[in-house]
Image (cartoon, rainbow, N blue to C red; front, top):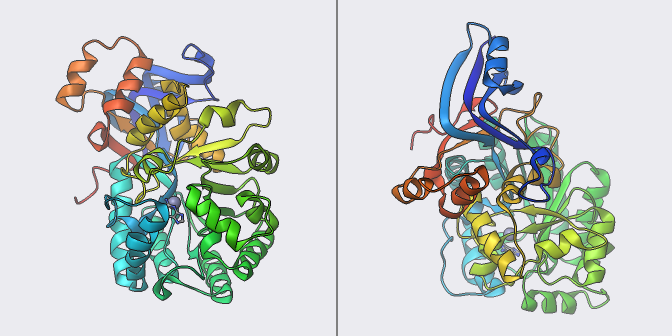
Length: 437
Ligand code: GUN
Ligand code: ZN
């Protein structure tokens, strides 16, 4: 049995760090070791201790002085939107109609889907992201392409075919029945195959008829262990249109509540303009609000109130995500940098330990996969990112004055991007250096 022994400065989190001095919230080894066998971390700790367990045959890789962290997790991203990232000048509904829906019609072509799925996962790995919760297009073939590519790479990913049957061009519409049937077939084919997870994915209330919402609810009842992902309360025009389409609803969240879509595995993208009643409903059901800062700023949608959700009497679970192609960068470092600024505009702060917790263990907990990923604990899958805080001249110069781990992390978040990512391990395999591009 071949094993790999990584050496470097290891950092992973045990729980939410309350303050910058809350040392027991994380584990940091200045000279750390990770022993990997069969895609899992089998020993972690001080290098000298781990080395004793490694045996002569272990392949040793020395990443000093770089940091080894759990691979980043992106909790909401649209893989079919790679070719519309950076599309100028629209708010959400215009952006969807002008750029997004026409772009997604291309995924009727399975070959196009396979090409973009490959390039998408390349790009995620290049940026240090080892797990995503991804939206595919409405076409079953797009989800097949995504899962095939993900499975080939042995990545733990969550994804689903979008369900949408109205208020969009014909080329991206299914029907309540075909959306249900295709989702079921994809679940049978992919959910639980290797590291693949299926997410029931009604795009949002505007593009699903009441009949389709019923079908999405039926799928959630039939498969209570599956994730459900959708969009909620991103933009004022979206909220008003939803109210027109579902006039009986108390508010936007009530629409999803009515069809049984709230729950511990339910991921709601954006959640910017929620009332207290809606936040209570998310909290009571254990649903997750997904913070997508670059997208929210780019589309002018608003400021997600991260600390309000955390601190309220009924806290709301939070994940963080790029939301590419509404989001403007594939990097979770760039995402949390913009997240820091959004939180600052709300008069609050997110300290660097909290940010890195969010990208790793926090997102793993929000996606209910923390027993597998998001840490460097023994028994975890070996999804690991190697970060170089001196990756660029500007970073190197700034590092001359950095004295603490907190300062280094904040520098990585503020100036870091794909150049900062030296290596990425997916289930123990060096995936970034393996890449052809
Ligand atoms: N709401 C419904 N679909 C989408 C999408 O693709 N991107 C974003 N940002 N919001 C949405
Ligand atoms: Zn989205």
